[in-house]
Length: 274
Image (cartoon, rainbow, N blue to C red; front, side):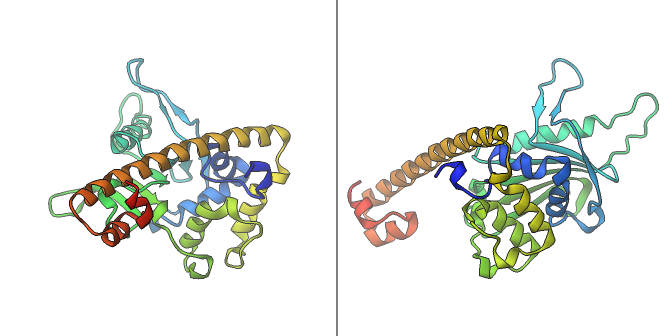
């Protein structure tokens, strides 16, 4: 389906994400979403957007580019990113990016090294390899000691594995559920669901309506959507080929068709053709 045939924008595209969450008129949407996942003491009342490019302290440092980078009213720093596909060294990249909002807080002259909190928030359109077997989709990562006590509470990495969210509209319970439903299904909707009648979602649906875009915005969105679909197709094909390879090995080991089908999701006809 062409983007022009959809009623609402896809928030997982670069253009869609920045249109809904990276513009001053819509920052209430970002604030509301972040407040669903932040600890109570760091709830945001207001924030300001910073440049999404952060340069290193000297020319030898690499440049980091974030989807969104903003500063809370109390000084907290937030990196917010959509990640559409797994990358090599993804966790290393998250740690590296978090170092820029830390370093930029350095003050010239006498400075006591007091830092404001830094949060990296990743909305992931994939599942971590080491979390495939668990159902937990929200991961809060922080520095802890050998007794699992928090050593430093001003650096947090929050990841949401979207593919694990399976709830239907009727099953939505919390405000957090509603946000995840929006991320997964917004571009498939034709009308606002009954469960999403809150004022904040009224604002979101208005901002997401493609018919209200300028011709330039439509063109930019079409290009962003094409890139997203091309990437998704590559990822899905790679995943399918990987699953078939696993099924082949299971078949060679003498596992039954029903067992292979249950474990891989392939039909018995697909397995038979391998």
